[in-house]
Length: 424
Ligand code: GDP
Image 1: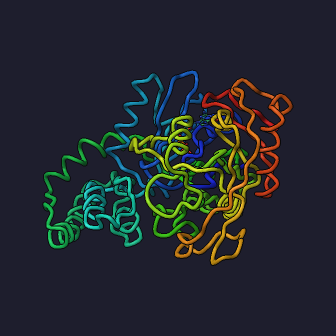
Image 2: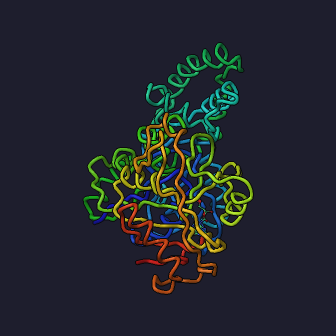
C-alpha cells in the first residue's frame, strides 16, 4: 500500500491534473480533498481534452474509484453540469467510479451571489475571486451554516434546516447588500434540479477509504491550487479559503489516519498567477505577452489571461517546504524552448537586503526580484522522453532549479499529453 499526494507548489495551474492523470495508473483510489469548482485541471489523454473543475482527475482510468472528500466545496449544480459534460465526451460516471462523501458540505446557491456582491462592493480592492462562491461557502462551513451531502437522505429534516439557513442568509442578502431574498420555491427547485441528480453518488466514503486502507489499496490525494494560495500559509488575503497543503489531505479526504508516503509537488518551469496580489517576479509588456502565448496561459475556468514571470526560486523553495514535497514534477519545460536567454528569479531584495526567505504577506509587495539568465536551448524538446536526450542547456536549467529548491525533480513534463514525460 502506498499513499501519495499531488499538490501545487506555487500559485496553482502548475499542471496537477496532468500529473494525476499520468500517475493514477499505479493507484486504486483518487480523492479530491479540498477546494471547489474554481479549479481548472486540464487533462489530455486518449479519450480527449477535458477541463475538470471538481471531478477528480482519475475518472479516466478504468477501475479507479474517485472520491470527492469532506473537505471540498460541493456545488451540486456545477458538479452535475460538469458530470454531464464529461459523460457527453464518452466517460462513464457511475456510483461505482465516482463517490461523494456524505460529510461534504454543499455549496448553497447564495454562496455564488455573495461572492459576486462582495467583489462588487470591494471594487478596485477586490481579491480577484473566481466568483464561484468558495469564500462565502467556507466561512459558512466554519460557522456550521451549511448542509452536509448526507442530509439529502433525510428530506424532512433537510427542508427545515434549509429554511432556517435561508432565513438567516436573507438578512445578509437584503440588509447588507440590498439584494433579492431567496424563497422556499427557489430552493425546492434547486433541490430537485441539482441535488437529487447527485444523490445516487453520495455515500459513506470514510468507511470506503478505511476499508481500502485495510486492503492495502494505493490512494492518491489530489489538491487544487498551490502552496501560495493556502489559507494559512499563502499570500493572505490573496489565497483561497481552504488548505491546499498535503498535510490537509488526510483530514479533507475522510481518512484522518492516512500517512503520506510520497508528496509530489508540481512546479511549472516558469511562474503564472491568476488574480490579484503581489507577484514579485511578474513580467510585463511584450516579454510577458510572448510567454503567455507560448504557454497558452489563460484561465481554464474564467479565460482570464494569467500573469506570467520567470520561475521564482524563493517562492518555490517556500512552497516545497510548506508541502513537505518528496519529489517534484516540473511541467511545461517545452514552453521555454523559444527563449534565447531564460530568466530565473534567484533571490529577493527587501529593505535593501538580499534575501532567500519568503516574506510575510504584507512585506511581499515591497520585495524586488533578482534575475539571473540561463542559456536557452532553442529547439523543440516535446518529443524527448529520456533525461540524457534533453539539450545540455535544458539539463543545466533543471539541475539548477533542483539544487536551489532542495527536492529531487523526478518528472519533467514536455507537453500536455499523457506520454509527454521524462521520468528520472
Ligand atoms: P492544474 O490546475 O494544476 O491542473 O493546471 P491547469 O490545467 O490549469 O494548467 C496546466 C495547463 O498546462 C493545461 O492546459 C495543461 O494541458 C498544460 N500542460 C501541462 N503540462 C504541460 C507541459 O508539460 N507542456 C505544455 N505545453 N503544456 C502542459
